[in-house]
Image 1 (tube, protein in one colour):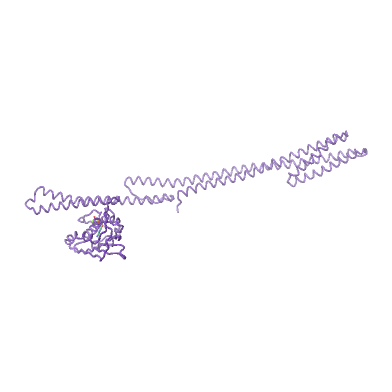
Image 2: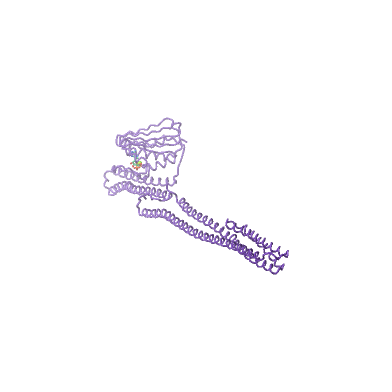
Length: 485
Ligand SMILES: Nc1ncnc2c1ncn2[C@@H]1O[C@H](COP(=O)(O)OP(=O)(O)O)[C@@H](O)[C@H]1O
Ligand SMILES: [Mg+2]
């Protein structure tokens, strides 16, 4: 099934929106990772390095003050050393809490042990000094502490080095991620753009292509060409529907065109024939050619009158049909007996039937109920049906007019049955269209092609139905129903 324009647009937009959400989600995720890395760098690595640098400078100062104290025995230097030792220990604890890698933690623990030894050695020497003892090896204490201090320094440098390495790695990773994100975002955006353009082009092409074709065909129609539009490949459902309706319109216009041509030819014949007769007759009267024969003269004036009546009748038919088509017909309904209406109509046709030696029979069931009728119009229907039967049935034929009440007296069914030339099955419906006449090449059978169309309008106005059944050369049965109300 072809998707509708609405579906196409929604799907196209959803695809692009999907890509946009994908790109955004990816960028947000990557930014989050990069932000964590940067935070790590700022809060852990840089801080660790600065702690290490502080520890290193505390160590250096401690060595200086401790030496000064030993040489001068000045208690202020000792106090200064004490303050530095506290600061060193605090800074070391702070460093240990933020270190996480195994190697750095081990180095920090080593520093702690080394520093404990350093402090113990110093305390020991201070003990000797305070006791006033002179026979201890001050140089050996000094060299041992110096050794420890440089070991601590080395380890602090090692941590700084490792932290710098980690920092570099993280920076590298961030820049790599930023690079990757940019590439991927650009790629996805390009794909989304390409896809969007592709979808837009296909949608626009499908819609405008079809519209162009319709426009071209409309122009053709305005020039009087009613060719069908072939099914448009890949057109949206609405356009497909539009094409279908367009083709129906073309067929209808074609039919109307044929009808128009038929009408002109039939109707001009229908008008021309009486006018020609009237003209010839009037001419003869005018020239007083038949002055000697008053009988013939009367015949001629009678002919003129009959032909004039025919003309008027034809024109009235056209006017009536136009009124019925726009529902402007005024109906005069009354509770009437259809049997009486039929009898009245048949009476007029008996002389014609006799001339053609046609047996015209009327068979009405007893107790046909009265119903709501426009008597004049219903008589017109009967005139049309019976005159058709007489017209299309050869001499010595049979015509039966039948009236029946359907079960439970719900409706009345009237049929006019003849054994005339019949109607081809394919024409059984179209004969009820206006101006429709089946061309048999028999020029003597005059008609407007309006009788059945008018009859159908009248029956419909009575809420009944009308239809024909027929077999070529066997005969025709035209029936209609009337609801009993
Ligand atoms: N009883 C019938 N037998 C054969 N053909 C008929 C009969 N009634 C109608 N038709 C066909 O239907 C056509 C339409 O009938 P109608 O509308 O009365 O127009 P018209 O009688 O003026 O031709 C006729 O031209 C004729 O071909
Ligand atoms: Mg007729």
